[in-house]
Length: 343
Ligand code: FA5
Image (cartoon, rainbow, N blue to C red; front, side, top):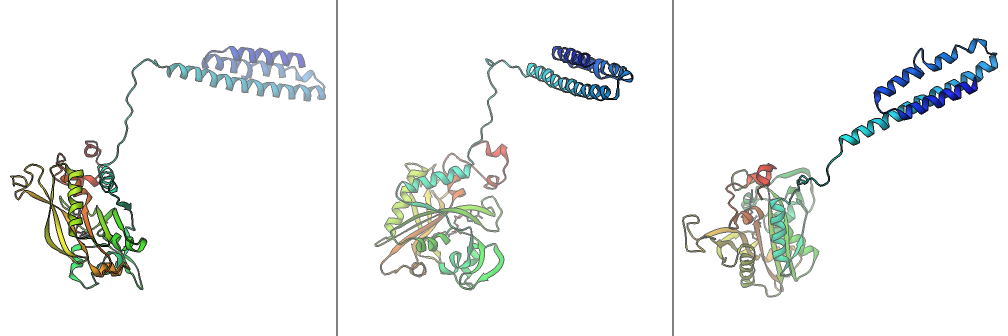
């Protein structure tokens, strides 16, 4: 009996390994393992065996059954792999489909370009908290809690307990918090460029609730308005183009004295006045000489040090660059690929 079983096993496995498709394997399964298959045929001989022979043959038949089942399973997966390999065959000489490659967002490019223009003349890019204490965003910048100038920087305050010295927390409405933070971090000479996200409850074609500003701060002995003007003209030429210039208009900020609005000449008429710009100039952002009280709040002696600061919108500055005609800044934050992929 033992020999018969071994022969059956060899025959079955040999046939299974030869099988080329699922249909043939199904036929072999019925032939060997089916109700009237060859294994069950052998069990018909059992009644003639002694109890010991029955146990021995039963065990051997079970092992054979298992081996045939395993062989069927392995051959089935080999056959289907071969079929799918055939289906996946491709011509390596065929021209390929160009993969879709992403690119940097317009604002990331703007931030990198602005940083690199300032870094070339020794400014250091820094980043400070965008959820900030009242002291750094307002109080320390000469805007006590009841001062009406705070209204210009409408803010999202955070509903957390106030710090005994630094006050409440707010989402930064401007990057000027970086002025005090930088004075705390290092002693002059200071040449900082702080680019960060700002938040104000605004929503129209030139205002979004989240936007970016870049804040420059220069502090040293003997810094005056001519340094401020020189840096602005350097930026105008290196970021906007060789014929671009800036001009200063008197303004008011609580944290700078004197304060200025900075304009840049129009790319079309270069300052003469045209239908697009009317006056020949377009507004860039705010600036001024750092207020002596702000220097003191930053731990510096205003009798020794002086400095200037400026804070401009990244979005506005970037779209003002000639060639980029964006009538509305809101799509910059709408993640619409039809818009983003144009740049
Ligand atoms: C300020 O925020 C001052 N901290 C700037 C400053 C810094 C003055 C240092 C003096 C010294 P202002 O509120 O004007 O200033 O904002 C500056 C620029 O931020 C604006 O010119 C504009 O380009 C941009 N901006 C302000 N609010 C928004 C907004 N909601 N959406 C998009 N850009 C905005």
